[in-house]
Amino acid sequence: MPIPAGATADDWPSITVDGVPVRSLTCSEHDTAKVGVSVCGLQFGDDGRYSREIMLFGGDGATLDAADARALAAKLLEAAESLDSLP
Image 1 (cartoon, rainbow, N blue to C red):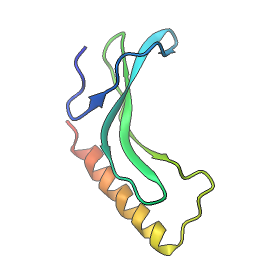
Image 2 (spheres, helix red, strand yellow):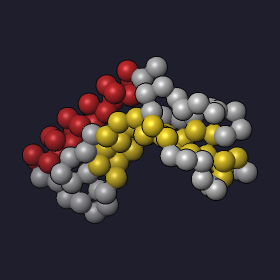
Image 3 (tube, helix red, strand yellow):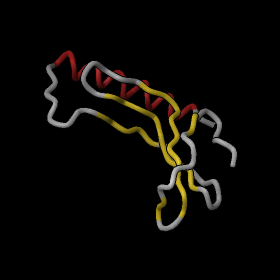
């Protein structure tokens, strides 16, 4: 099954959703010093459909000062532009 344009994909793992194999997709990363920001998704092995969204990582319980918040806001805008530009 082809990988969607603009993405890299993990191998098909033994993970399933409702009995359908899925693999992780990564389109771009826009990390700050405290929070990871990724344009990513899942591809389903039954028909090739896929999702793309912006996910945040590593921010559990993290506190942000004003500079951190501005950096995160800038990276979120960057990620949104990246998501919008995908075919």
